[in-house]
Amino acid sequence: MPAGHAFTEARRHALRALLAHADLSALLVTKPANVRYLTGFSGSYGALLLLHDRTLFFTDRRYERQAAVEVPGTEVVLAPGDLIGGIAGVLRAAGDGLGFEPAGLTWGDGQRLRAAVPGRAVVPAPPLVEDLREVKDEREVATMREAARLGSEALTELLAGLRAGVTEREVAVALELTMRRLGGDGLAFDTIVAFGEHAAEPHHHPVGRRLRRGDFVKLDFGARVDGYCSDMTRTVIFGRASERQREVYEVVHRAQAAGLDCLRAGVPVADVDRACRDTIAEAGLGEAFAHPTGHGVGLEIHEAPRLRQGAPGRIAAGTPVTVEPGVYLPGFGGVRIEDLAVVRPDGHELLTTAPKELLEL
Image (cartoon, rainbow, N blue to C red; front, side, top):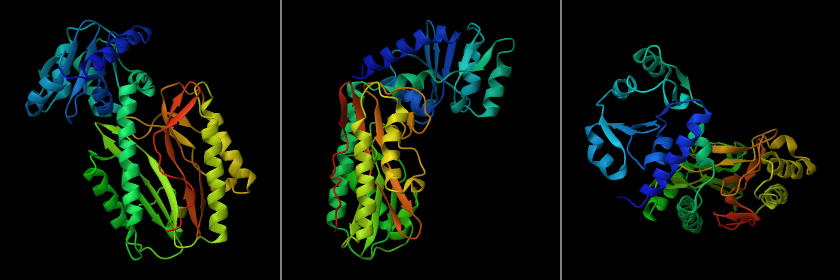
């Protein structure tokens, strides 16, 4: 059996323990990240039906052999072209109280599922799997650490070869190719590359804008390894920084340090946001920081918890989160500094290790 089978078996066992508390006799898992977390399946067509005494995995013949290797310990059911139809056939013999993932089914499929088992309670389930996924085990952390290492190495290579005249699109492609060459499976998300005034857009889409002396260069990117993501942002100056560029950079640098300083197990998530936000507000730039401070990362690039104003809850040990304050000034540019860190009982471990001092290329 694959080395990860014991992990997925333990996760399914933990999930079963949550079903009774949610008043469910079964859970249909269709969200791809959740399917992968509970089974190890890396294909694009699959669903998991978790009953108290059975585990069924639905796919089609394209993935029959792959499922046999990646999803041992389950009953594999082939449902070519119609997962809902295949699942409904099994559900007719199951107990009442089926939960499904609202984020993993279209409205139409949800209605089909209800119609297929008349007289049975078919209800949207709470985010049970997402709750389990929030805290990572050390195997998951190691994979994310590797994804972060690839990103840091790719950044070093890229900055060493950055030249005037290159376009944002060309830099984005270069980052992706480098991360893949170094061993990444792909991108964690679409790379953000923003030059000069474009750096004032928090989520700028790379275009044909060419690099010029004196530009901000904002790079937000991540690699994916075995399904797990990394996330990092660095902002540098191409050429010599102006006094105003230095001032803005140092404000964001201090804000990010303040957020990381309070990042440890048990801290309210809103406190990390407040630490960053207060530092930027004290510099008179509070209105220029208009997004949350961070988010969880794992099989998806945006997971719980959300580090934002007013967010409830506390951060648990073993949770990877980003800390990414920014200042964005239209017509001038912007700075964001982002690290991915795993929360530990007495602090945190940085997974992204690229330098953060102001770099002039």
